[in-house]
Length: 160
Image (cartoon, rainbow, N blue to C red; front, side, top):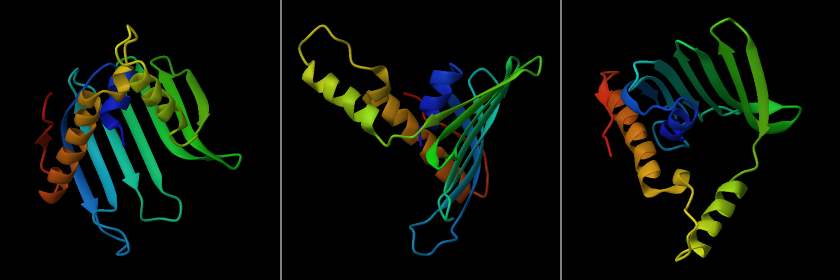
């Protein structure tokens, strides 16, 4: 999911508050199979996260709006390839879009293998694979699920 990681890397802020609705549509999947969430960052910017897995074309979508522009990331297909379409519209209205093909977890595994093989050396592991970053992502997801169970009531994200 990586909502926390995406926001921190691209916007520079942590998610602090979420309000979500969840639903259970496809009974062959464990519940919930859909999440629609509004979130607030520590700098006051707001965003939207939507994850739909109960369709033939699962969707993941992030959108963060701030004073300097709007950042949108959408997982989908382009020219028959799975990946992420990242668009940024700055405050003047200039829009830049880039498609990044999805290669599974190949790069993540390479980073992990490098980190564990560098144990005892002076190489510093990539912060994105740290326990803290994983725990932050889980905390955001947990807050979304709690909010969904409370019919959209705002829930503070646990801090680490």
